[in-house]
Amino acid sequence: MLAALAYFHYDLLDPENRPFNQKYLREEYDFVIIGGGSAGAVLANRLTEVEGWNVLLLEAGGHETDISDVPLLSLYLHKSKLDWKYRTQPQDSACQAMIDKRCSWTKGKVLGGSSVLNTMLYIRGNKRDFDQWESFGNPGWGYEDVLPYFKKSEDQRNPYLAKDTKYHSTGGYLTVQDAPYNTPIGAAFLQAGEEMGYDILDINGAQQTGYAWYQFTMRRGTRCSTAKAFLRPVRVRQNLHIALFSHVTKVLIDKDKKRAYGVEFFRDGIKQVVYAKREVILAAGAIGSPQLLMLSGIGPAQHLEEVGIDVVYNSAGVGRNLQDHIAVGGIVFQIDYPISIVMNRLVNINSALRYAVTEDGPLTSSIGLEVVAFINTKYANETEDWPDIEFMMTSASIPSDGGTQVKVAHGITDEFYEEVFGHLTSKDVCGIFPMMLRPKSRGFIKLRSKNPLDYPLMYHNYLTHPDDVGVMREGVKAAVAVAETAAMKRLGARYNSKPVPNCKHLPLYTDEYWECYIRQYTMTIYHLSGTAKMGPSSDPMAVVDPELRVYGVEGLRVIDASIMPAVTNGNINAPVIMIAEKGSDLIKNTWKPKQKSRSRRSSKCSKLEQILKIERTSQCQKER
Ligand SMILES: Cc1cc2nc3c(=O)[nH]c(=O)nc-3n(C[C@H](O)[C@H](O)[C@H](O)COP(=O)(O)OP(=O)(O)OC[C@H]3O[C@@H](n4cnc5c(N)ncnc54)[C@H](O)[C@@H]3O)c2cc1C
Image (cartoon, rainbow, N blue to C red; front, side):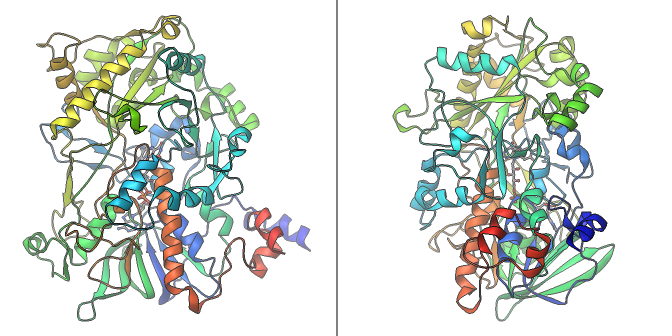
């Protein structure tokens, strides 16, 4: 019978199939999660491990696509229907080479959120980041506390790294693997690192400073978004409802009791309301979560009054403390050999077949990202192993796609592109994006109006703190110097020294030139965070407490990138997943005494899951 079932309902049995979009919703759930992104998908999985808890996940976007699965094509997703297509307000301090001087803040509007559009780099950050969070007055968030949550998600596919059980684990929902495809340029970058005296190491292990091959949240060469990792395996859980194309407009709060009791949202053009018995959880990301808090009356009172919103709780920090990682775009090196990722050479029927049949080849390259380096500029304390620059080292760069996708994704003007990169279009190049790790500048968002469908006003404030200018300038100089190593010279690497418009009046390679340059091609790495920061009650700017409960209103938490008090030292997807893993346990600890849990190691899979073997096999087998 099972064989027949499998045959006729393969889509139901396939644990890698997409989750169901629930048509009819209940009136009330135990928990309502807003946003099915990196954090929301984890929360939905973990909370429905508890038998008897009903969970609704509301997501404004729809499903992933075949294109979003292909690592090499991720730039096609920017400005597509999977992207919110946010743009910052024009400011003089950065993004001067972009159309209207506005930076493009790509953000996922799809189940899986930004983990469907990102470049899948798996970086946990530095031990000191989390110890610092704890030192700000957040007990339970030190490195030793959060390491188990990184490991809980992880399914490490590199057998050598997996052996290091202090830092890695296997069997988690999130597949982490090495790139199936690298070019000889990656090896040259590593040799350059060695030549300059850096260690080659596991940058997610004991030491961060050094060089390494990147690892990716990929599964068999395709994207492993959080929707794929955390939602698909549990798609038949009876206590999980996922509602797609559901745009939340407000959290309903009882003003007298100061308690969240439901959520208002638009679905198919119809306004609907759903109630939450226990908690509403905001996981709408660093723009969506503070926006919804403000629309619901939680935020800086004066600002809410300005836009005509009833103040429920005056929380000065909502939308403030905005942090992002920026890099400098356009640090391109021409090389002499046809070994780089040139799109019109490598995207063809052969590479498509190789991708489909052997799960490797150029299409599995995450837009050429191969090697990572964590280095110190003169502003960092070298003895600390808390580097201040990350090099993202690539076997492709802006002109490698014929001047089509990167230019559009970053919003670079045609004139800037033509003048600086036009002569390199579709030529063999490689690149380094030096990314500043601990910015001191802080941006903010505020509401444009009380219309929930209006995008908020976003102010990046990049490079407004003088220390950031120094670190960024030194980072660019260090990146350009990499091309001078013997390892890179063997490839004929030479920096594209075409001066950029607006900085031509300054002598090339001087500090003044670089300080001008970094304000032109300022490149967001899309690590928006900090806009509903976690902190002790004594901190007037803290929006949530160390258990991620919103100050001033009961039954409401924020669990996503917004809660970071300070952005972590690296790419932030893995830390966001960790936050959601830990956040799920905080919720369970609040309510669990009254509930039976079916958490992975301790209890039973549901009957349906067992029959259909839809849960990850290891899990169900272990439990039977
Ligand atoms: C282009 C790009 C490349 C990146 N590359 C990397 C990388 O290589 N490595 C890395 O570590 N990090 C990377 N990041 C960053 C990382 O992916 C994000 O920081 C992380 O995904 C944020 O998780 P989140 O849960 O906070 O928000 P998201 O994943 O953005 O999830 C928020 C979800 O909430 C939904 N939502 C928002 N508002 C509403 C509403 N009103 N109603 C209903 N739903 C709503 C959104 O549609 C979205 O699905 C990248 C990000 C981008 C955009």
